[in-house]
Amino acid sequence: MDQLTRRARDLGIVVGALPTGRDNAITDVGGVLVGHTTIDDGADLHTGVTAVVPSQLGPGRWTLPAAVYTGNGYGKLVGSTQVDELGVLESPIVLTATLSVFRAADALLGHLMDRRPDGLSFNPLVGETNDGHLSDIRRRPITEGHVLAAVVGASGGPPAEGCVGAGTGTTALGFKGGIGTSSRTVRVGDRPGTIGALVQSNFGGVLTALGVPLPVGEMIPNADRAEPSGNSCMIVVATDVPLDARQLGRLARRAVFAMGRVGASYSNGSGDYAIAFSTAEPDQRPIPDGEINPVFAAVLDSVEEALLNSLFTAATTTGVAGRTSHAVPHAAVIRRLSAAGRLAEPA
Image (cartoon, rainbow, N blue to C red; front, side, top):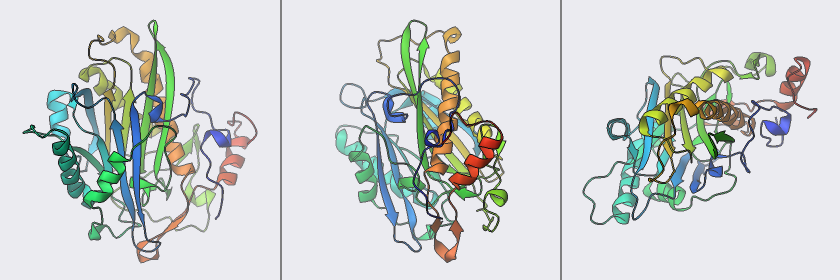
């Protein structure tokens, strides 16, 4: 099935009423960069690295307030316990495949040591999902060079989505998954704020868009409906709203809650994690809890749309052992949502 790469909004699927940032991406949060390294040999390897790099981390400021929420802990999120304990992020966030996470962490550690020659303790933060359904995960092809290319090559502007970086070999909700991103802008008290999300989708359930179920068996009747047993999702949330670690934990929880909007099953083997951080200047006081509701709404909407983008921008992929993961068929989705009266405008 060949179709043009289209984001959810390109199909008339508009999540919520809040406005998006300029590029509708996590990079709309000032200073947040994204980089990818993709490994795709057209046969047995479909994997890679995605890096979310807060450029605010550097000389004079080596930590940002941060939090991690574990929806289901069947995963290997390296560095998470120190974030829980101290409430700070001190490295770029790297995403990759499950069995490559430790090599990626060592590569990221080397990068951090090079940046701070006098440092004696570092906490690289590396998350993963299992792309073994489409990629020969036991080969562990990720190298230091792949990780550094994603981190050092990270940039602003619209990030690539779908079958790229850490999303190259992922499968979600019965379809081909991938990397997706989205953002929202809000007013928090008397100040503007931006919230952005980036996801690596690789989890089970029944795809749901705007409340309408889109089961793979109905969208693609002849498709192989087999799913990998260890499905997971990594979510990164960035904001320029001044929040402390406790408040960021509340954002991270809602990021995992947003998976339910697109039909996640939250299964036993699903490692569902969210990382949230703030880029606000350290002299800015955290907002009062009474002003945080618009930020909660922005997180829910941006994560939901990022998840949809991760699927709608992905392409059908055949990988290891001849297994095929099909892209979401746009035309069938449009017909179903049009019949339900859910599209914002004719696509």
